[in-house]
Length: 283
Image (cartoon, rainbow, N blue to C red; front, side, top):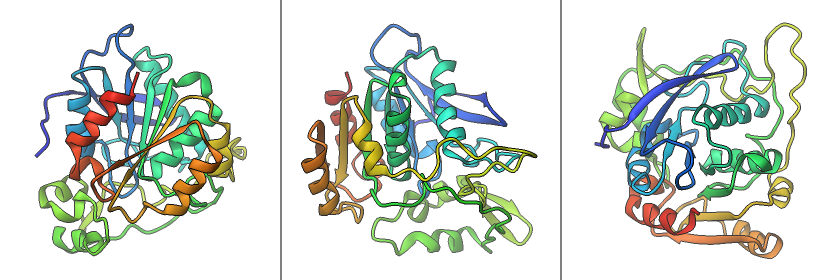
């Protein structure tokens, strides 16, 4: 069970209130702060409490739930565009008075963090991508996908079973207490605390324009990143594709690649190793 000794709160960002967890001394002017972005099947900031608490011995750390996930609000306009999500990162950083924090993104959020670094270079000092598949598609792809019915599971165990057979199952599939926190009681059983329309990238507000950032290529964006970049891969992860890291080493020579003995859920399987690694590379 993660240590709950940290501060929590909410920050208004566009049409949602974002839930955050804050660790360490948050006053500006000390060591470089770190913002942690969770993945899509690693459902919210709860999964990062242990790592954040460990890193916070040296620097302030904030992990927040993406819009539509965890304890953050669902977008009333179904706006899960890159414009909205990257603005959320800016707003979290500004709330704490941080000009150029380090940004860490895991899994799906590794690609989000790359897009952030490419399009907001003045808003971060360093990029850490943790075990992220570097293929095309979401996030980055423009798509209208609203009205998806949420899946209702008869029991908590049924929900856990949907992900338990994966090569790198998330903590949700292995720890009933964790699963309970990622589910809410609904008629007929349990549903995820995640908007089923979280892949929709077109705001449904009347007259909403097309998002400015759409149909982005993650490799092209990575090539535009100017800050220091570290890729952290799990040696046993199914996302650890040799072709990704061969391409990174060949085409993006300013990136460093670190390997941790874990599957995809590195924060759960190797937290001490990840904390030590972040202590070495975040400056």
